[in-house]
Length: 155
Image 1 (cartoon, rainbow, N blue to C red):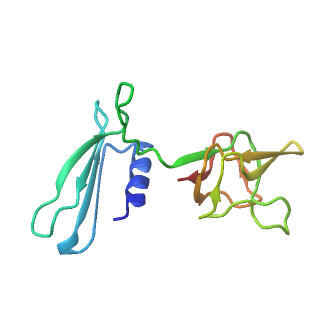
Image 2: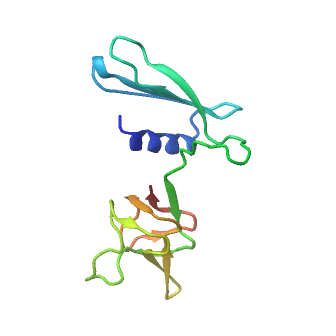
Image 3: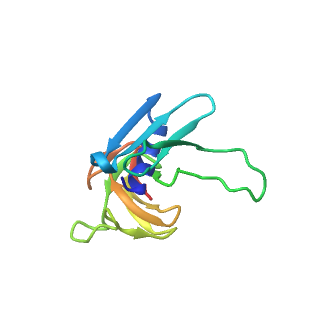
């Protein structure tokens, strides 16, 4: 299982109503199992991949830990949802004949235009808040979007 897949699973699990989730992949000799659990301390269990004959060992990594200055924190919130700032019509490109601003896999820099939302005959640009890669483009060009609706996911 790829680390990007695990990070995406963690992000989706955090934003869900599920209390526990287990995902298993791989062949008999190279199996990987990820178990995610929510409780009052908010830990996530991420098993380490073990050699074929040994069972996988589980390691608990807190999502957000209280740390002092200089202490490292493992942050699995690497996938950012870009949400619509208003109700309007989503446009992926500046004009119908143009290429989209971004597509899945596009690399973006902070401040790059991701799309346009038309509201009350005004064109409003939605820009990237950080550098990253577009993982998912959710609406189709010309669709009506709601305030707070997820438009893009950036890794």
